[in-house]
Picture 1 (cartoon, rainbow, N blue to C red):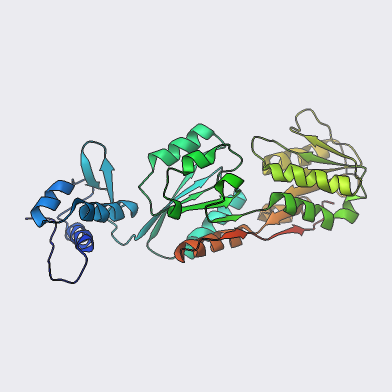
Picture 2 (cartoon, one colour):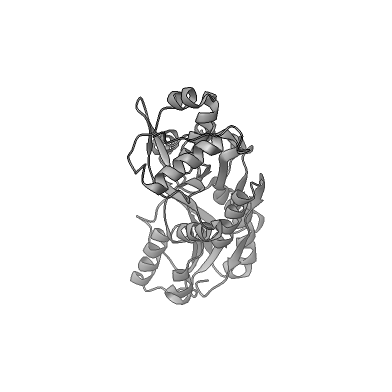
Length: 332
Protein backbone atom coordinates (compact mmCIF):
# COMPACT_ATOMS: atom_id res chain seq x y z
CA UNK A 1 0.00 0.00 0.00
CA UNK A 2 1.31 3.43 -0.95
CA UNK A 3 1.92 5.85 1.92
CA UNK A 4 1.12 8.85 -0.29
CA UNK A 5 -2.26 9.44 -1.88
CA UNK A 6 -2.95 12.28 -4.36
CA UNK A 7 -6.25 13.11 -6.07
CA UNK A 8 -6.18 15.36 -9.14
CA UNK A 9 -9.62 16.87 -8.59
CA UNK A 10 -9.60 17.34 -4.80
CA UNK A 11 -9.07 21.12 -4.97
CA UNK A 12 -6.27 20.77 -2.41
CA UNK A 13 -2.68 21.58 -3.50
CA UNK A 14 -0.73 18.43 -4.21
CA UNK A 15 2.05 19.21 -1.76
CA UNK A 16 -0.56 19.54 1.01
CA UNK A 17 -2.03 16.18 0.00
CA UNK A 18 1.43 14.63 0.41
CA UNK A 19 1.72 16.21 3.88
CA UNK A 20 -1.75 15.01 4.87
CA UNK A 21 -0.98 11.48 3.61
CA UNK A 22 2.15 11.22 5.71
CA UNK A 23 0.37 12.66 8.76
CA UNK A 24 -2.46 10.13 8.34
CA UNK A 25 0.06 7.29 8.03
CA UNK A 26 1.69 8.37 11.30
CA UNK A 27 -1.66 8.65 13.12
CA UNK A 28 -2.79 5.23 11.87
CA UNK A 29 0.49 3.61 12.86
CA UNK A 30 1.48 2.75 9.29
CA UNK A 31 4.51 4.98 9.89
CA UNK A 32 6.35 5.07 13.19
CA UNK A 33 9.28 7.04 14.51
CA UNK A 34 12.44 5.89 12.75
CA UNK A 35 10.65 4.54 9.66
CA UNK A 36 11.99 5.53 6.28
CA UNK A 37 9.74 7.48 3.89
CA UNK A 38 9.41 6.81 0.17
CA UNK A 39 12.03 8.73 -1.79
CA UNK A 40 11.27 12.04 -3.52
CA UNK A 41 11.80 10.46 -6.92
CA UNK A 42 9.54 7.47 -6.21
CA UNK A 43 6.66 9.76 -5.19
CA UNK A 44 7.33 12.00 -8.19
CA UNK A 45 7.19 9.10 -10.67
CA UNK A 46 4.29 7.25 -9.06
CA UNK A 47 2.02 10.29 -8.81
CA UNK A 48 3.28 12.27 -11.81
CA UNK A 49 4.12 15.40 -9.83
CA UNK A 50 7.20 17.59 -9.95
CA UNK A 51 10.12 16.93 -7.68
CA UNK A 52 9.69 20.47 -6.28
CA UNK A 53 6.15 19.59 -5.18
CA UNK A 54 7.41 16.60 -3.21
CA UNK A 55 10.34 18.56 -1.80
CA UNK A 56 8.03 21.39 -0.66
CA UNK A 57 5.93 18.87 1.29
CA UNK A 58 8.96 17.17 2.81
CA UNK A 59 10.55 20.50 3.69
CA UNK A 60 7.46 21.67 5.58
CA UNK A 61 7.34 18.40 7.51
CA UNK A 62 11.04 18.74 8.27
CA UNK A 63 10.62 22.34 9.47
CA UNK A 64 7.94 21.10 11.85
CA UNK A 65 10.28 18.39 13.18
CA UNK A 66 8.07 15.53 11.98
CA UNK A 67 10.64 14.12 9.56
CA UNK A 68 14.39 14.46 9.22
CA UNK A 69 16.84 13.93 6.41
CA UNK A 70 19.88 11.69 6.72
CA UNK A 71 22.60 12.49 4.21
CA UNK A 72 22.86 9.85 1.50
CA UNK A 73 20.02 7.76 2.95
CA UNK A 74 16.78 9.70 2.63
CA UNK A 75 14.02 10.94 4.93
CA UNK A 76 12.87 9.32 8.17
CA UNK A 77 10.06 9.91 10.67
CA UNK A 78 11.52 11.95 13.53
CA UNK A 79 8.39 12.58 15.60
CA UNK A 80 4.87 11.17 15.80
CA UNK A 81 3.50 14.48 17.14
CA UNK A 82 1.78 15.77 13.99
CA UNK A 83 0.15 18.62 15.94
CA UNK A 84 3.42 20.59 15.80
CA UNK A 85 2.92 23.16 13.04
CA UNK A 86 6.08 25.20 13.56
CA UNK A 87 9.51 24.43 14.93
CA UNK A 88 11.77 27.24 16.19
CA UNK A 89 15.56 27.20 16.61
CA UNK A 90 16.50 29.42 19.59
CA UNK A 91 20.19 30.19 20.07
CA UNK A 92 21.17 31.91 23.36
CA UNK A 93 24.64 32.99 24.44
CA UNK A 94 24.19 31.45 27.92
CA UNK A 95 21.45 30.54 30.37
CA UNK A 96 20.95 32.60 33.51
CA UNK A 97 17.94 33.59 35.59
CA UNK A 98 16.86 36.54 33.44
CA UNK A 99 17.37 34.65 30.17
CA UNK A 100 15.19 31.94 31.71
CA UNK A 101 12.49 34.58 32.26
CA UNK A 102 12.79 35.59 28.60
CA UNK A 103 12.58 31.96 27.46
CA UNK A 104 9.55 31.15 29.61
CA UNK A 105 7.73 34.29 28.46
CA UNK A 106 8.49 33.43 24.83
CA UNK A 107 7.06 29.92 25.24
CA UNK A 108 3.99 31.16 27.11
CA UNK A 109 3.03 33.58 24.34
CA UNK A 110 3.67 31.31 21.34
CA UNK A 111 0.60 29.21 21.95
CA UNK A 112 0.12 25.51 21.35
CA UNK A 113 1.63 23.29 18.66
CA UNK A 114 4.89 25.24 18.30
CA UNK A 115 8.07 23.44 19.28
CA UNK A 116 11.09 25.44 20.48
CA UNK A 117 14.56 23.86 20.62
CA UNK A 118 17.06 25.88 22.65
CA UNK A 119 20.84 25.90 22.12
CA UNK A 120 23.77 27.81 23.70
CA UNK A 121 26.97 29.07 22.08
CA UNK A 122 28.66 30.27 25.31
CA UNK A 123 30.34 33.18 23.46
CA UNK A 124 32.30 30.70 21.33
CA UNK A 125 32.40 31.51 17.60
CA UNK A 126 33.07 27.92 16.56
CA UNK A 127 30.12 26.58 18.54
CA UNK A 128 27.94 29.40 17.19
CA UNK A 129 28.81 28.51 13.59
CA UNK A 130 28.45 24.75 14.06
CA UNK A 131 25.04 24.98 15.71
CA UNK A 132 23.68 27.07 12.85
CA UNK A 133 25.31 25.07 10.05
CA UNK A 134 24.12 21.78 11.57
CA UNK A 135 20.51 23.00 11.66
CA UNK A 136 20.10 24.77 8.33
CA UNK A 137 16.74 23.84 6.80
CA UNK A 138 15.43 22.05 9.88
CA UNK A 139 13.32 24.85 11.37
CA UNK A 140 10.48 27.22 10.52
CA UNK A 141 12.28 30.15 12.21
CA UNK A 142 15.70 30.91 13.68
CA UNK A 143 15.96 33.21 16.71
CA UNK A 144 19.59 34.12 17.27
CA UNK A 145 21.36 35.94 20.08
CA UNK A 146 24.71 36.90 18.47
CA UNK A 147 26.05 38.57 21.65
CA UNK A 148 29.31 40.36 20.85
CA UNK A 149 30.74 37.68 18.55
CA UNK A 150 32.37 38.97 15.37
CA UNK A 151 31.41 38.06 11.81
CA UNK A 152 28.13 36.43 12.82
CA UNK A 153 26.54 37.91 9.69
CA UNK A 154 28.60 35.59 7.49
CA UNK A 155 27.13 32.57 9.30
CA UNK A 156 23.57 33.84 9.65
CA UNK A 157 23.59 34.75 5.95
CA UNK A 158 23.39 31.02 5.17
CA UNK A 159 19.82 31.03 6.54
CA UNK A 160 16.76 32.35 4.65
CA UNK A 161 16.41 36.08 5.43
CA UNK A 162 12.69 35.77 6.13
CA UNK A 163 13.21 33.09 8.80
CA UNK A 164 15.72 34.92 11.02
CA UNK A 165 15.08 37.06 14.12
CA UNK A 166 17.89 38.74 16.07
CA UNK A 167 17.58 38.90 19.86
CA UNK A 168 19.06 41.10 22.63
CA UNK A 169 22.14 42.49 20.83
CA UNK A 170 22.20 43.52 17.22
CA UNK A 171 24.94 44.95 15.01
CA UNK A 172 25.08 47.11 11.88
CA UNK A 173 25.90 44.12 9.69
CA UNK A 174 22.70 42.41 10.89
CA UNK A 175 20.45 45.38 10.13
CA UNK A 176 18.49 43.58 7.41
CA UNK A 177 16.94 41.19 9.95
CA UNK A 178 13.96 41.87 12.24
CA UNK A 179 15.10 42.22 15.84
CA UNK A 180 14.08 42.93 19.39
CA UNK A 181 17.07 44.33 21.19
CA UNK A 182 18.53 46.39 24.02
CA UNK A 183 20.18 49.76 23.36
CA UNK A 184 22.99 49.17 25.84
CA UNK A 185 24.74 52.52 25.40
CA UNK A 186 21.57 54.54 25.89
CA UNK A 187 20.22 52.30 28.66
CA UNK A 188 23.21 52.45 30.98
CA UNK A 189 23.67 56.17 30.33
CA UNK A 190 20.01 56.83 31.16
CA UNK A 191 20.00 54.48 34.17
CA UNK A 192 23.10 56.04 35.72
CA UNK A 193 21.72 59.54 35.13
CA UNK A 194 18.54 58.54 36.97
CA UNK A 195 20.73 57.43 39.89
CA UNK A 196 23.06 60.45 39.69
CA UNK A 197 22.22 62.03 43.05
CA UNK A 198 22.98 58.70 44.77
CA UNK A 199 26.16 58.08 42.77
CA UNK A 200 27.47 61.54 43.75
CA UNK A 201 27.56 60.39 47.39
CA UNK A 202 30.54 58.20 46.48
CA UNK A 203 34.10 59.17 45.56
CA UNK A 204 34.53 56.85 42.57
CA UNK A 205 32.41 54.61 40.33
CA UNK A 206 33.90 51.33 39.05
CA UNK A 207 32.54 49.37 36.09
CA UNK A 208 33.35 45.67 35.89
CA UNK A 209 33.58 45.00 32.17
CA UNK A 210 34.58 41.74 30.48
CA UNK A 211 34.90 42.60 26.78
CA UNK A 212 34.59 38.93 25.78
CA UNK A 213 31.02 38.80 27.13
CA UNK A 214 29.68 42.29 27.75
CA UNK A 215 28.22 44.52 25.00
CA UNK A 216 30.53 47.35 23.95
CA UNK A 217 27.62 49.77 24.38
CA UNK A 218 27.75 49.34 28.17
CA UNK A 219 31.35 50.60 28.26
CA UNK A 220 30.63 53.47 25.88
CA UNK A 221 27.53 54.64 27.76
CA UNK A 222 29.35 54.39 31.09
CA UNK A 223 32.27 56.54 29.90
CA UNK A 224 29.94 59.17 28.41
CA UNK A 225 28.00 59.39 31.70
CA UNK A 226 31.20 59.82 33.75
CA UNK A 227 32.62 62.45 31.41
CA UNK A 228 29.40 64.48 31.26
CA UNK A 229 29.05 64.51 35.04
CA UNK A 230 32.78 64.81 35.84
CA UNK A 231 32.71 61.68 37.98
CA UNK A 232 35.92 59.86 38.92
CA UNK A 233 35.71 56.41 37.43
CA UNK A 234 37.55 53.20 36.65
CA UNK A 235 36.99 50.19 34.40
CA UNK A 236 38.27 46.79 35.53
CA UNK A 237 38.00 43.42 33.80
CA UNK A 238 38.14 41.31 36.97
CA UNK A 239 37.51 41.49 40.71
CA UNK A 240 40.09 38.81 41.49
CA UNK A 241 42.82 41.10 42.82
CA UNK A 242 40.58 43.98 43.92
CA UNK A 243 39.66 44.83 47.52
CA UNK A 244 36.54 46.99 47.82
CA UNK A 245 37.07 50.29 49.64
CA UNK A 246 34.86 52.80 51.35
CA UNK A 247 33.70 55.52 48.96
CA UNK A 248 33.40 53.23 45.93
CA UNK A 249 30.27 52.31 43.98
CA UNK A 250 30.40 49.32 41.64
CA UNK A 251 28.46 48.62 38.45
CA UNK A 252 28.34 44.83 38.09
CA UNK A 253 26.86 43.41 34.85
CA UNK A 254 26.81 39.70 35.79
CA UNK A 255 25.39 37.75 38.73
CA UNK A 256 28.47 35.64 39.52
CA UNK A 257 30.57 38.74 40.18
CA UNK A 258 27.69 40.35 42.06
CA UNK A 259 27.89 37.55 44.62
CA UNK A 260 31.69 37.91 44.74
CA UNK A 261 31.56 41.65 45.45
CA UNK A 262 28.90 41.21 48.15
CA UNK A 263 31.04 38.53 49.82
CA UNK A 264 34.12 40.74 49.61
CA UNK A 265 32.24 43.74 51.05
CA UNK A 266 31.18 41.61 54.02
CA UNK A 267 34.75 40.39 54.54
CA UNK A 268 35.96 44.01 54.66
CA UNK A 269 33.29 44.90 57.19
CA UNK A 270 31.89 47.65 54.96
CA UNK A 271 28.28 48.80 55.19
CA UNK A 272 26.41 48.60 51.88
CA UNK A 273 24.70 51.85 50.82
CA UNK A 274 26.60 53.71 53.53
CA UNK A 275 30.29 53.19 52.84
CA UNK A 276 30.04 51.39 49.49
CA UNK A 277 27.40 50.94 46.77
CA UNK A 278 26.34 48.45 44.10
CA UNK A 279 24.39 48.82 40.88
CA UNK A 280 23.69 45.56 39.07
CA UNK A 281 22.59 44.91 35.49
CA UNK A 282 19.47 42.85 34.68
CA UNK A 283 16.88 42.42 37.38
CA UNK A 284 15.95 39.11 39.02
CA UNK A 285 13.77 38.08 41.94
CA UNK A 286 16.91 37.39 43.99
CA UNK A 287 18.04 41.02 43.61
CA UNK A 288 14.82 42.21 45.21
CA UNK A 289 15.77 40.32 48.37
CA UNK A 290 19.53 39.96 48.78
CA UNK A 291 21.15 42.58 51.06
CA UNK A 292 17.80 44.33 51.41
CA UNK A 293 17.56 44.87 47.65
CA UNK A 294 20.09 45.52 44.87
CA UNK A 295 19.62 48.51 42.56
CA UNK A 296 19.48 47.39 38.94
CA UNK A 297 19.48 48.80 35.42
CA UNK A 298 17.33 46.33 33.57
CA UNK A 299 15.33 45.63 30.48
CA UNK A 300 12.00 43.83 30.79
CA UNK A 301 12.82 40.27 29.77
CA UNK A 302 9.22 39.10 30.07
CA UNK A 303 8.18 41.82 27.65
CA UNK A 304 11.04 40.87 25.32
CA UNK A 305 9.88 37.25 25.21
CA UNK A 306 6.25 38.25 24.70
CA UNK A 307 7.03 40.69 21.89
CA UNK A 308 9.32 38.21 20.15
CA UNK A 309 6.52 35.63 20.13
CA UNK A 310 4.12 38.20 18.67
CA UNK A 311 6.59 39.13 15.93
CA UNK A 312 6.91 35.50 14.85
CA UNK A 313 3.18 34.72 15.04
CA UNK A 314 2.33 37.84 13.02
CA UNK A 315 5.33 37.46 10.70
CA UNK A 316 6.39 41.04 11.49
CA UNK A 317 9.57 42.50 10.01
CA UNK A 318 10.36 45.11 12.67
CA UNK A 319 13.23 46.38 14.78
CA UNK A 320 12.03 46.93 18.34
CA UNK A 321 14.05 48.51 21.13
CA UNK A 322 12.97 46.82 24.35
CA UNK A 323 12.19 49.14 27.32
CA UNK A 324 14.77 49.60 30.07
CA UNK A 325 14.67 51.34 33.45
CA UNK A 326 16.48 51.95 36.70
CA UNK A 327 15.05 50.01 39.66
CA UNK A 328 16.21 51.85 42.76
CA UNK A 329 16.79 49.76 45.90
CA UNK A 330 18.79 49.97 49.12
CA UNK A 331 22.23 49.03 47.70
CA UNK A 332 23.10 52.66 46.84
